[in-house]
Length: 132
Image (cartoon, rainbow, N blue to C red; front, side, top):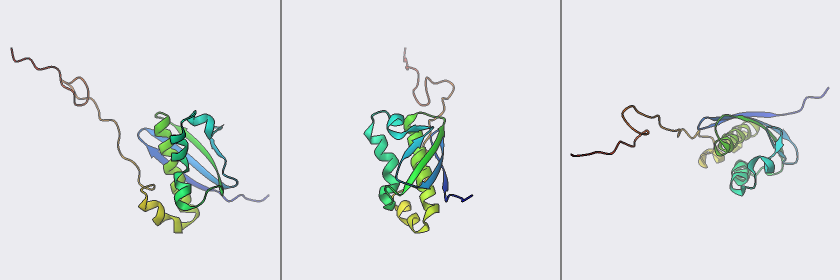
């Protein structure tokens, strides 16, 4: 039995997380068992976001992506996949790390929704002030 070379990366964005596996192949992207086109549902910006790490590392069409995501919404999940792909590419070829780092693809986007505070309508919105 021959072992297949694969590279793993975990990506996170907002409340979404993704486990990404890169396998040498033709560039097919499978997310939760579905092809990328079905997952992003006709939103070309999201498909472009998934391919960004490959463009920066000049690795288009060299790896198949198998991703499993959970939590958050579709945009957060795509951001998590992008982060996971970048980490896996850094593992596959360490010379890619500085390039990916300068494009901020290895940095986890730490922006999350701010919690609601008591005495307010939302996180920052206040109730209407009445002087009289």
